Image (cartoon, rainbow, N blue to C red):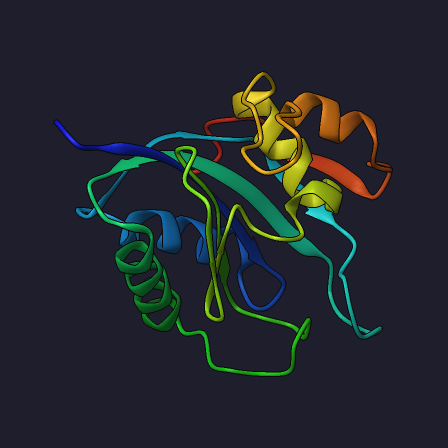
Length: 169
């Protein structure tokens, strides 16, 4: 469709049926967000308070005609639909969906930061993102590629659980 933008979304879950939570979130993005590709599934150490279950993480590439703020509204609704309730920052969550990139758009607002502010430092984001787009240039990190960013982080806590295609029956 004309006017569509390629977006990358990070998905994570460390409560309940983590795999099913991610599948429900991917399915819930339609029809406004059309998922084109999903990374492998990874298990990662939690960030934040101790005594949390490990996260399942993945990244999807999708197309949408939504503007970043509209996309955020859809993402927040999908999180609610999957069952997320507000809790402590970096606390356990049923589902977490972060907007990583929206084309080469840069948004810096109180409720929305695109590219995601922490993505360049987070192996649990960069490993699956690089799987889909290693040569993609980060619009705000001095035009560094995702693969180059990944080479500068410790990815030892990111463990492959399932190859691409895990989200399909």
